[in-house]
Image (cartoon, rainbow, N blue to C red; front, side):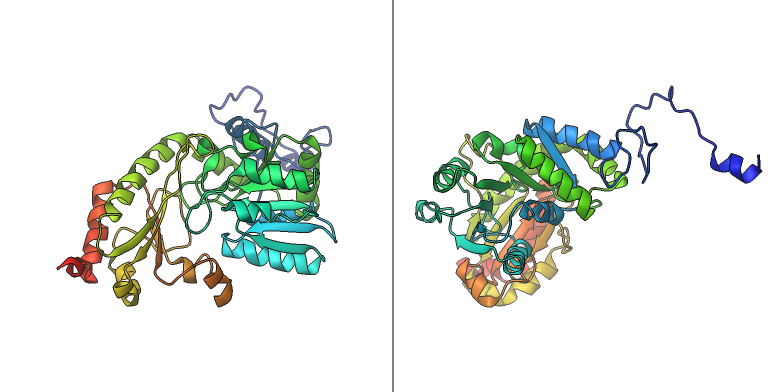
Length: 375
């Protein structure tokens, strides 16, 4: 046998290796008898991660995708021409644009409602096919009663699919499936990753038919999470509850401090009812006082411990302007309709010492003259 052939066929027997963590299966292909066969269909790292999410969500099925937006796209593929999609008015800007374009391209009717109100929920169209919303919302972290939406949607159409983007609550603090939702959706890039170093998306459900549709869509559209990202996310889940506990404590402290500042007009924090939403961490919104609105950029520039990169819910703190960031893809009228102003600030509270973060915010307020408002 030629030496090159011998080299190409050489394999290391790992049967008795007994690693304490699952290694990365950086394979695109497996032997024909393998249950994985081809990584675009499944991979050991992806399957292990899905088992973790099933345990966390207490769901029967989990489907991991390459990004959160890929998870949303996979969900939209459950719709067909002539269907009717309902979304909430307060929603991530890129999601809104995706819904608009998808519905226009595939002749799907799109209705935008304020699902934070009883009036909005009761306005559900009779031919609704799918309801998709975030709770807490982006922006303003307002809560939507999942059970109430489910009840009204199923009353209009028993086959309606109710999808909750649970990214900001996480299954640690909110479990949409327990309140009747058909699908729970996540951008794993945020809290699950926790380090701004990996992207991913997750869909969980108890419905085997929905799970099969989602897996087939993922396979044919090539939207599966890659092995390395799955391995990194699995690693991050080891510290998930610890991180969330620390994030939550710091977020509450900074919320309370912001509420006392003369340079702050309003602070937005979700209502924790102990039934649907049992906790919260990391993201805070606040509006600068009207007299300081022209000094927004100066305020952000003065911050030394808050990064301005595109990210959130990670170990490092970040500051962003939703008007020109997360919702930049929306037009002026759409931003106005959701009440989004140039004064709104989004803080993502990391794992730095909370006293240092408060001191940093304090000196930034001082630089823009916030302390003089009460003088």
